[in-house]
Length: 167
Image 1 (cartoon, rainbow, N blue to C red):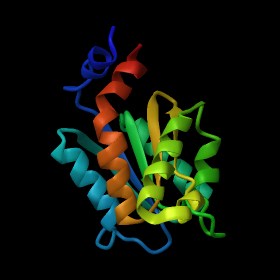
Image 2 (cartoon, rainbow, N blue to C red):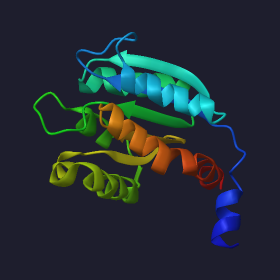
Image 3 (spheres, one colour):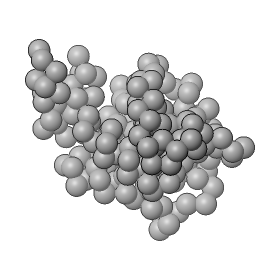
């Protein structure tokens, strides 16, 4: 199967998605990045089956992801907590959950971020991987970073991820 045939095989697939905001300050009303993720997913024909707002602490993050999986999410996207400050713990919280890392996501995200923000891109610990029957993406909390990741990396490949996970 050619690259284009392979990629187009999942083009019309509708994904069941979860959005988990990991922040000590964001609420449903102030969650610009999480709301953007949900809107972009829905605008592209996907279903948001789970939303959660949790503090940037390992146990609430892992619980929200487990709840999303129990609710049938195939794609889980977290936002927030991927930097290097003391309170940024999302990366550590999800690292244990990832069964198969997708290193290319973080590498491409930082490369694209570098084009926009320069060397500060190296401080992002955005990552992705396969977890218990789903694909997990951990995005920064900034609106611009979310828009970049969603429009340039995640949305163009959602169907392809579903096809690959079903094999």
